[in-house]
Image (cartoon, rainbow, N blue to C red):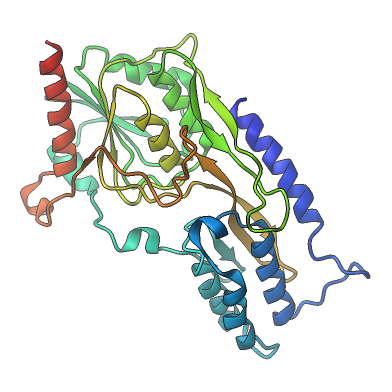
Length: 344
């Protein structure tokens, strides 16, 4: 089943669930702080998909925060309290949006090395001379290795553009795909790119959805597959994917799929995770709540919500800006050079 079809089915299921939430006998909900707090807590309680995986005691969270809510609380203080409560889920896909602010959980990457500096790459490896198309920055490095930087899976890439880029690297010894600081985007774009590095259908992973309000009520995993991009250029030489902790959501999914391919090496830091499909719900006061509602598993049935380890762990040096060297990129260049030497 194509992942687009899977996402359509999940969207329909969750929409039905959402339409049934928080309607009383008079089809009227009072807009008070306590009502909105209870609505928020219950939406998360019934639809969030990682309680069991993360060991979060959501009832205890309610008991801690509910006594702090009263109908005299200001909008700003109430918003901050709700954001603090949501942070207990430790999920970068969970956020609350109002007319005056949005809450996010940033600790999934804040306490880790940055491991990427655009200026170092542009100045010392690309010499400020490169092409850009479809959200991709690309160039042949002097080591005869192709380099692609893709900063967001929200940037759609046409098949024609991708054909041109891969054709540009046809004589190179290998290809580096840099998704450091890529915060995610569309899973459809993951398939568009990954399909250029396979020559036969592969099991890309599994998807689950909530079947009932209980925290452990998840469907049996059902598989989705990627197929080669028929009629387009496929790339079979060695590939290295560069990651850091800010590689998140759809970018995390891309790393998961690419790591399963035999010609691919992952180098850098552990990714930031974010393997749950996020869906948006509305509170009575009009605030929007986004949360992870449907887990995506890898081809072995493992969850990658906490991130994906690289094949080769490398951090950039603290003095990288002074030396102009990117240790992660240097390791990737050496890795492809060694593979080329072995092949010869």
